[in-house]
Every structure is written in C-alpha cells, then in structure tokens.
Length: 62
Image (cartoon, rainbow, N blue to C red; front, side, top):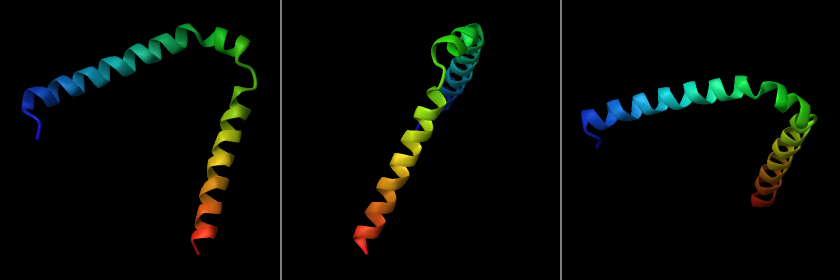
C-alpha cells in the first residue's frame, strides 16, 4: 500500500508534529488558563450531547 520510504516519512512527520504541538502548548499554557477558563465544561457538554444523540438513535432504531 505504501512504500517503505513513505512510511518512514509519515512516522517522522507525526513525531515532529507532536513535538511541535507539545512545545507550542507549553509555551501558551498561561494564556490558555487566562482566556479559556471554563472551556472544559463546554467539552463535557459536547460529549454529553453526542452521547444523548447516540442514545436516542439506538432507542428509535429499536
């Protein structure tokens, strides 16, 4: 499916991308705490909403 060189490139790309994302997040950590207070509750709300949709879908399907 993929050549060995393509797989090597993909692995290096993913590793480099993750390292850059970690570095960037650590750099902006204080700004995130200041400007995005309470965003965790928004995430919880989305997860609950998706869960309710899946529950309703399975209930209606039966």
